[in-house]
Length: 155
Ligand SMILES: [Zn+2]
Image (cartoon, rainbow, N blue to C red; front, top):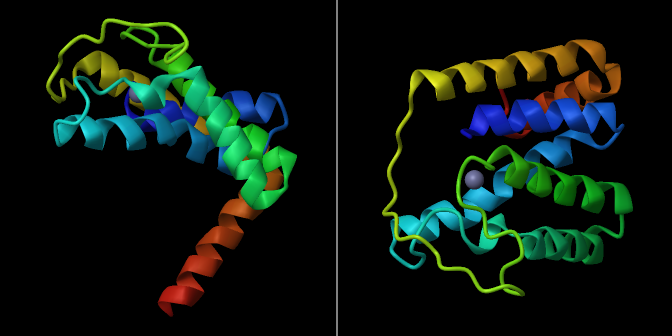
């Protein structure tokens, strides 16, 4: 799945479960933020590796809890990263690495953006818009973030 798909589907389910949507959405990007650059520079054999594991989701939970001391933020970040794994199910996912050995397929980084992926991204954007319309708390947080960025950039 591509970024907008991950954002929209994760926001939708985080909203259903009353989680912190902003942090769930951030968590939904972490697996690709870890694995894709390492694959591009040739450190990892493919773009779904250590970042696409339940071990990494646990690490995200623990490290964010140590930093923030807030369970809702830590749980939402970890939830987002687990959602990413489910959303990537059509691909090879080393769920239980490093506890179970996997034969990682060698796949140099490439992007094949087809009509199907465009449609899924569009559904993701629709879901994000739906959550934005339905959840006033989420709308307020997004508005606060935009105001904060504008004031820092002095716009
Ligand atoms: Zn991924």
